[in-house]
Length: 444
Image 1: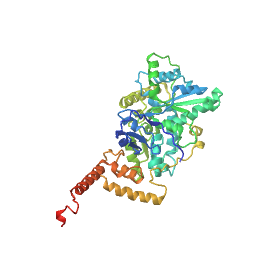
Image 2: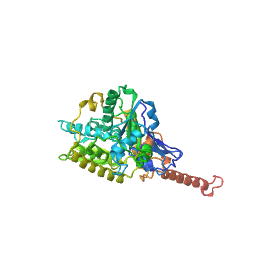
Image 3: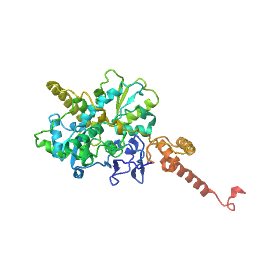
Image 4: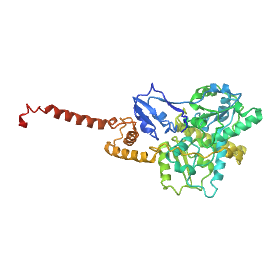
């Protein structure tokens, strides 16, 4: 398997070796060894759950920086609608967009506009006969990776359309190349991202050979500078083009509303553990009456991303207020949301099948895998089942798997170790009381 890029990294100096991150990781990708967390990269889906839960802030995200803009002749910012939610309604979107140009970007294009394009495309896709249902949203890259690894049988249920940010990048790269008379390689396109999974999807695209996005810059990285600019007052000459429909994609339920599923059975699920539970239900065939499942790894949607700065409940309030105001303003001036799109904007010819990554298998050799399953089940019966995590594995089942894989031992369990010590003490006590035959009167 080729080396896989991950944006989530450990800051070893800060790690105290607690098991909080290991126990919260939905993929059981973290173990504590030598007093430090270790991330099994083949299992990590960059959902950022460990970043949220670590009390010592020992996890970080590798993203790009404004300094990287110097590598390109023309730079375009793609702000996620989540960026708007970091500010109150008194800060207009026009000002935020203009503020980005003051940070060094030559042009700004809203991901919310890409979301409107994707909404129309999904609406058309759902009309196709014979598609597998429930259709599962593919906009969240962490969820797509979860399906690749844990539920590969559900890949065919995913919407075969790029995420809004990828569509936005494709549109802008072609437009800027044409208008600025530049080679596409001279154009830097930067996603202002709320989460690490989006950064990973730039390096490891899902559903295409190469991403149209050059890099990703975390919202938290630029928020301070942008906030100062906005506080200073800006005379914005940049205009928003997106409608409330695209902006609403940042909150849970926004995608379903944008697609227009009033007459369909839809399910909105957010939070990576809840998403995993629902996907399991789909895999078991228990949600056959559902038409569409909107899945988001972060609680509340992208506004809950680990690279945001605003409390997610406040951010949701900000965005709902903003969307309501945008709708009123647009209706007042007769401006309508996007009504049509071009097939070329979806990059259908560039798409490739999303491949399963079944790294949860115990062994590629079926005979060895079956043997390891036996070892694992036998060991699991012997372990206490308390899932205390003191062994460094998140659960007793995970420890049993680690033992079967030969990367842990039974005595890593503190209870099994105590049993061994007790048995050894009893044996030593019995030996200590035993006399040599020449002195043992009871043996005569």
